[in-house]
Image 1 (cartoon, one colour):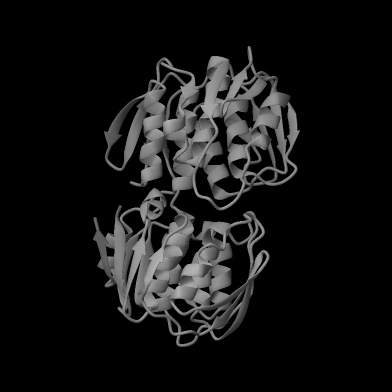
Image 2 (tube, one colour):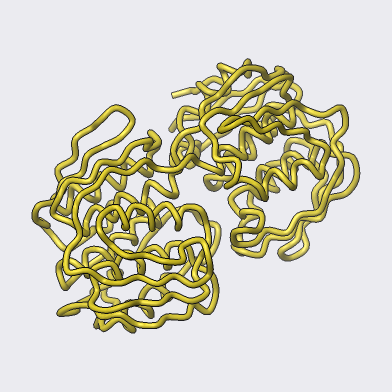
Length: 416
């Protein structure tokens, strides 16, 4: 199992290109199931989760052709209506194939999903929504089994925000009969990106980016070309790296409008970030000031950046109270930061971080995707060498992080 070895204390400078968004690429790939015509997707990140989703599609009968920075997916006929456990267990987003398969084939059998152990993340909201659209659904032997002659439009109010639930029902509704209205829908940029793809395929989607989305169903959808948006979480991760150790770092290929909650929070700590077109420039300030943080669904501060922000707060002057409101088990990186010398106390869904603390290198273990990034950031500023174990989590969502950080001047080595 691969590890990363990081020698801390190296200053960062130069340019780094931001990859396409993993969390936009996965629903975009699932949407290819809605048509028998080819769909071309560009700006796909080269990460494990994307490769896993492509394997899921191929298991279902997709023909995939690698393009420069993307892929063409063609599914003239579905070879199977089942997404098996061996693939779905590796990644929770695999459940996104449920809605498209059911809408196209009238039946679907999808294993209950796996992924990072950061909370319950049940799929009951997906199931409830599809049931309201006319599906008959049973849970049997770890699989969701769904049937429907044809889904029909419905008005669905989510009791709380769900990104994958919103995406799954948007895709199912695109081939349903009539109009579907999703209330209290997720508002993330990845939702807007999926809506643009569906519209390119011939669907009618209104309101994406707001909390009410309307989808007029179509009898069939066609092929299209679509460029996946940049990854706002990768953007935020490199912003924190530069805020910790940067002399003059430029991030290219960004969408500054989509990372405004992150930029606002970093600026409040004293980090100066410049915006020039699709580029962000940032350097570490002389003094970081501790600022409290509360995660929230978009347009709030993303939970996927909470761990990285905590690494930053270990170097800030004062006390920062970080409250996690989205996932109940998302402080597992704290124990590893404590091993490196951080001063953090957990009280329920709140972590109190006192800084600045001089971190030292240690053997640490990554527990989930974003915790992995947090430990890499802490290792950049720590004295000595840090070895990060179980980085397969990191590879699920970050494209060649050791190469990108190395190009900025960091000392990062992958041990195979």
